[in-house]
Image 1 (cartoon, one colour):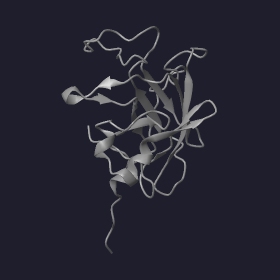
Image 2 (image 1 turned 135 degrees about the vertical axis):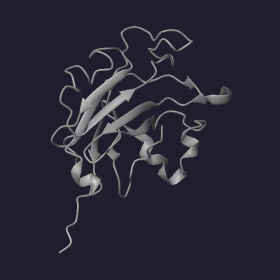
Image 3 (image 1 turned 90 degrees about the vertical axis):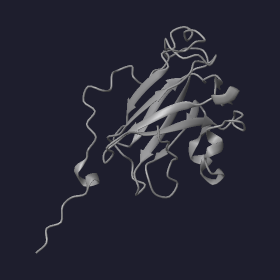
Image 4 (image 1 turned 60 degrees about the horizontal axis):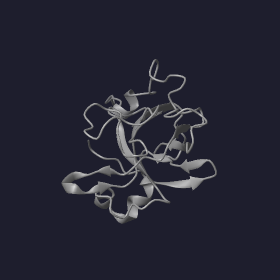
Length: 184
């Protein structure tokens, strides 16, 4: 009888994040910061089931479009803005990041990029992180050079919907409605 070996997706997981999350990881800014809002969502697998052991990592520009990085020639980001957030999913597959609306940032060739947040998704079955972006439904995304590379019928997977306390951005790792991921 032939013995079948497990596939990589059967051998990788659950995602082990011991030591990666920290208590204020979801807070890009402190609670009570003027203009702060939550980005909340659910990470789902190919069956549509919540992923209880994933981790969402975000990084972004400050509201003026500056980055907290010495390589940003426009100067350091403003205030206590950290520009980085990390949140493991709950047993229900949900996450939340408290942040500010990022500013417009320069793109290649003198273009500008719409307000967006870069996102890494770590989860079981993934040998490498998946990278995507969050754009905002109530902002002008029409001239964003990265969003323009995504087929129009799939752009909706990158647009966060306005909610009462911020925005909702769900991640679908595969299957119907799969989130668009970028090769970086």
